[in-house]
Structure formats: C-alpha cells, structure tokens
Amino acid sequence: MTTAESNDLIIEVTRLPVQPGAALRLLWMLDDSSASATDLGRLIESDPALSTYVIRLSNTAFYGLARKVSTAWRAVTVLGLATVRAVATAAVFDLFSENGRSVPDGFWEHSITTAAAAAAIARRVGVQPNDAFGAGLLHDLGTALVFRRALRRYETAMDRRDANPEMLLVDIENEEFGATHAQVGAAALGVMRFPAEVVGAIADHHREPIDVMSALGRLLIAADAVALAADGVDTEENVTIGDALDALEITAGPGDGLVDDVRGDRENLGSFLG
Image 1 (spheres, rainbow, N blue to C red):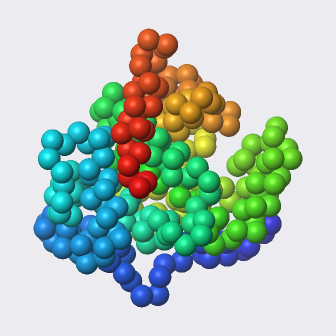
Image 2: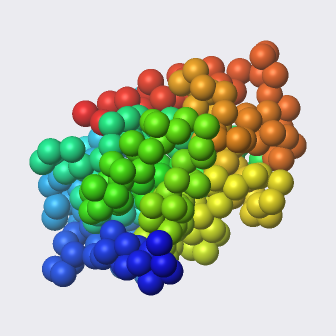
C-alpha cells in the first residue's frame, strides 16, 4: 500500500461530523482553561446520551462514592478532565452507538480493563491516575475507527491474523492499511488536539517499552499487558508483562496483587457498559 493510500485511510476514519454536536463542542470547551465544571456539565446535559455515559461512569463502584452522582457537573469533578475528554472523544466517533455493531467484539471490555490497569500503575509511578485512565480507555481507538469506517479492510486483516497466528498484528496492519491501529488512533487524537504526550503514548503502545522514552507511553504498554494478563493472557504481541513493568521499574511478582487488583477494578467498572 502506498503512503498516499494510507493517508487516505487515516483521513477517512478520522473525519469529524459536519455538524458539531455536544460531544465535539465539549472537546473544544475542554481546551478553554476558563471553563468551569458547571459550564462543562451544562453542555454535557444538553446531550442525553453523553450525559448518561458520563454520569454512569462516575457512579461505578470504581470511584467508590458514598452518594450517587446525579448531575453532569458533579460527574466532571469525579472523573477529571482527561477521562471526560476520553468519553467525549468516543462519543464524537459514535463508539457508543447502539445501531448494529459499533465496535469489534470485546473492544469496550478490553478498553475498560486497560484503563483500570493504567490508573493502578499510575499510582505506583507518580503519573496522574485520571490522565492514565483516559489514555487507557482510548488506546485501541484506531481499531474501532477502522472497524466502523473501513470494515472490509478490518475484516481482511483479521482473517489474515486468524490464518497466520505467527504474524504480529501490527505487521499485518502495516501491509493491509499502510499504518497500524496505534498510528490511526494517534492521528485521530491529534485531530482532536489531545496533548502531545497522550498522542505519543497511543502511537507507541505496541513498541518495545525500552524504546519508548515517555513515562505515559511506557505506562500504557504495561497497562495493555496487565489487562491481557487479567484476562488470562500474559503477553501483548511480543511484550511480556514482566518486561513492560521492568521498564517502569516495577516488580510485580505472584504476591504483588497488581493483576488481581485490576480484575477487581474491571468488575467495579462493569456497569459503565450498561
């Protein structure tokens, strides 16, 4: 595939709605440092579906609140701006759509587990947990975008992976798309004017952790590996959970409890999916 063709794919799957809805206007407002939680909440509540997801997430057992959140502005203060930005981005790209299959099977389950793992690891390495959670929630955004907007290419890549299990997914994607899902996701977040560190972390989350300099980038690689371990798989392509955590100078042996903690957090977040 030529570079021009891969650029065309990225342009196609990252295109924004012609008419900006509440979610896209929320992303613009999040760039305004003068916007208050009340301002953000008022805009969120103008879109019942977006409001439902923001409030539902804040009411999961993951956040451990004694009292139920009933307003969007309160949900914003609970979730933090990075997580609200992640939810709004998913809404802009219609990843919550209930019309047909909006994302691949298992997409949200893995994304939620990775977000939980990212937050758990962040607490151990001095990164803001809300920032890490938001990055984890969107780490496979590129996969969802190709699935939604270039389904035939996505299915071709998955068929090749099933037929050639020894091949790395990123190699298959490069051959089929001219780009990996990590690069597509990073391009989408660049369009959304996400912070450069988050865009870079998404782009790098299938690289070897030793080759990634960003703390958030290494954290996201580790979170993806821990999430797979929580599901009973201990590798993410060729990156083991041990290597990923070693790059962050975290020792997580059988008695560490990190994977078990993430399993518990995943269960606590389950109600977000409805």
